[in-house]
Length: 260
Image (cartoon, rainbow, N blue to C red; front, side, top):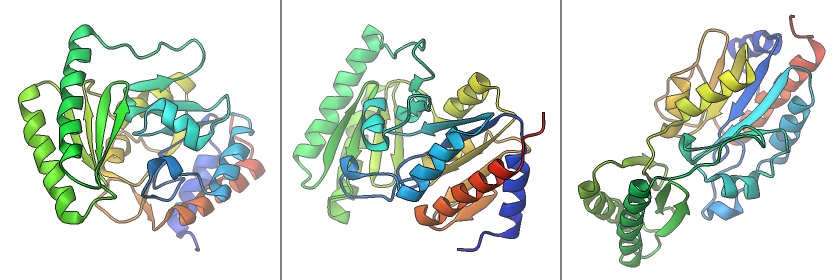
């Protein structure tokens, strides 16, 4: 795939920034979407490009995912110095001194009730699955027939509605439920502050990534992977195409010393 001239120009400017943050979604961005979430792995070209970027001066890499941190570590196999945002911003890992997520008693009770709703939904809708997170629970419908998936989401929303102060978000064949209100925009803002980034690259493929796209500033580069409405200024069709974006950034960042 030949990158658009406008995207090439934006990447060239980004490559010269003094402190670069490359913060990326995982599923659908670095890794193609698969039926079983545990089977996802980053494309080799993207993984290699991220490792190369992490080794360059003034460059920090990070993942911002809807996955729980434990799940993200298994499928992404991040390096020790890669920063991580999990559960759509509810979980963070910015180093060994970071504070672990802890729920209040009220939040833990609310989560137990939400889990019960999703467990009952899965039990009556063949092909759907449940995923447990430290601050939430997820209804997966990718392996269910379309009509069953629609019915499951409707049933789950109806059961969750009386619970009150929870966040319920639709994604690509998932329904995300969390007792902590956080999003990827907040996660990206934390990473920007933590790293002191002077500019950043963010890329994602889903509606939940739009919270992060909306936080981008002049000099940043935002990319949407695949179709759909987006606030990102640039779009590429597939994770394979995004591998080429990362490889181009590696080349530009390697050849052009950051401005000090």
